[in-house]
Length: 333
Image: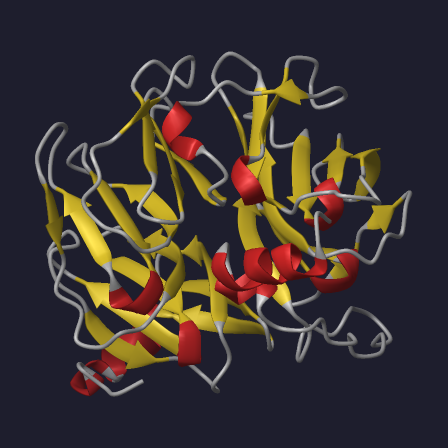
């Protein structure tokens, strides 16, 4: 790390859900599966028919029965460093996971086992997000403007050229459109980088907000939804349209998202709060999930179900349960 203070700042600002809480010791193994209650998980993804989750102490777990049972993936290096983000190639076999100390792991078997390809014990900036471009290149971004590209499947990495506006800002998330032709990188101090050529080149969007963005998602209308700290959510309704602030009834920081088949957008964030939008992201109602944890990510496994990761473990997500509690719109966090 550059300095202890610098890493503290990265931990608090870059991705609050992943970095602001001390890792927790995972529960003991159950006879037939891994317990997922109480551990700190930062990312959860549906990869083909498999669920994968990663987080504190470098743990990666997978489930082949929609979360009924979990198994611990094999890692060839036990760094016990925080993992923040995962991404997979279209074959659902090759994937990368990234985290603190510049840690990069690669899998070739869909997440059952992982090998270390990079780790920087001294002065290693946290890596916050990873993605695979249509070209086959992999990119990863992180704290202090860190951005790298790999052209050989993640084995070797070189600095990635980004606009000067990046400076030393923390880069928190890489997001893409469904067709992988349009991309965003979002970060602190309102930074939004955009690519309309499948990630080949990047341009900075004109500033429209001065706080931290934690994540972004493409909308079904070809626009973008960007969100982050203190309930600040912004919608670009269509390509090139102006950015408009969405209506959110409380200052809840959001970190992950999913979109249901009917178009409903679900954001997850601090205080176990869910942000629910039925109008394409123009406005959100708040509802509370289980407990009081910081929700970090969400993955849908079917038309009415899924899983949410948090700093307090994994919990099931049910559209039916959400609908049953719809009277809680506007609930205080």
